[in-house]
Image 1 (spheres, rainbow, N blue to C red):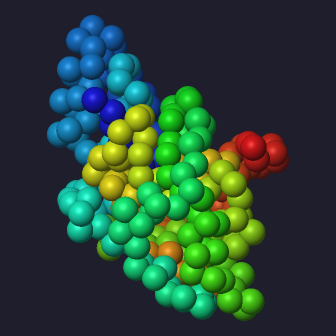
Image 2 (image 1 turned 180 degrees about the vertical axis):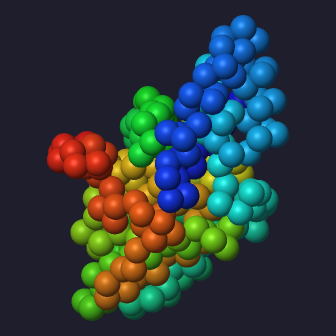
Length: 235
């Protein structure tokens, strides 16, 4: 069973605070395997479960303490703001756009990584182009169906070929715990940028910091460019 991936912190990274405390649980995971991991992941809901050995090592976490349960047929993605043609898209509308397949790592700012994740969706740039970005637009803001999480990118960041609106991962539909049925995936940045349960894409003159940035994380979240490091973003 794949597990969820919200990767970030309150004011202090959860992974760093609890690493030593969960070391014993990790040993139990070695003994009892993925059954224990599933049980902990399904009941704890704080990110601890995915740190146990086995499974795909994603962490389970939610800002609100629960996951929105969105039926795929009812899903709607609003595209608004500084666009010529505001739109509301269904999953079928997204699937009708040119699909893109990526095999990229998912890197958490707290240190854990899931390698070679298979993603499928549509480039964010294609969604923006379909709506027609105004010449005044310089940033993109994102909202979540959880009513709490927000994110943002500059327009140039949003137009990268490795930034997608994803509707499949691991060869199947994205589950609710992973942020489905549709989520953002920003490959070259830390996972907190990959907003789950994507509900709205809004073009603005200048994007405001998202939820995690307001809690202390960098606005420009290139992998490696944290805690003073200046590594180049992954391509």
